[in-house]
Length: 240
Image 1: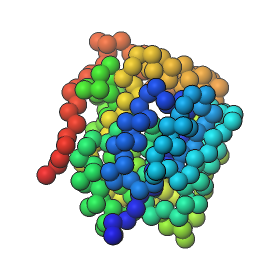
Image 2: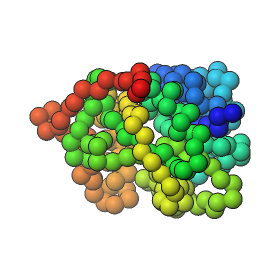
Image 3: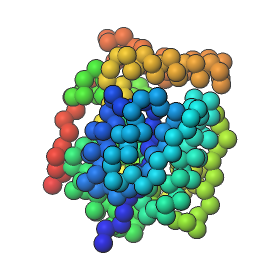
Image 4: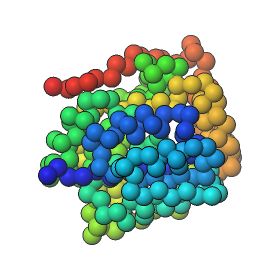
């Protein structure tokens, strides 16, 4: 029997965005969903409840993420490990694996060499069929840890930082035997200009609050069209 995967998601007001597409795409290879709804005021919790894979769903009445990201991430982690997972997938509600992941998943999961699988995240810009590829947005220069084999006998600790805390405990971020998959991920959260502006305002506010200056990466969100490089993205149905 193939090892099971538990996807953990931190969500907020995702009903009119990409949530259902992301969850629908995961149902072919993910066994369970563990979802922390961080204060949504729309139908996000209801949508999550419609999936039989949802085995844990907690709704925070007051938002936690904007003021203490690591505490929100730690809360989601504790919810997830309480379900006794085999593999854990850390994914956001605007991240979409290309369709070939369904056929690649068995080989990635049913092996004993690697305890972590990294992927390349392609930040789609203005259109889902293209991605940004310049500066900090270049997917070929970075990978993101998405899949981790859970071992209950390991210690797991979280950094006490209010922002940019990351999706994993410290012990998962380094020291694990890892490989990088050829499967790509579309990050859809940057497609719409209004979403980019919202993200810029949120990140700029946090930058100023925690460091006193807006970071270069945050400033680059508002780069002019002639300052960025866009390349076509074609989701692959198969890698074979």
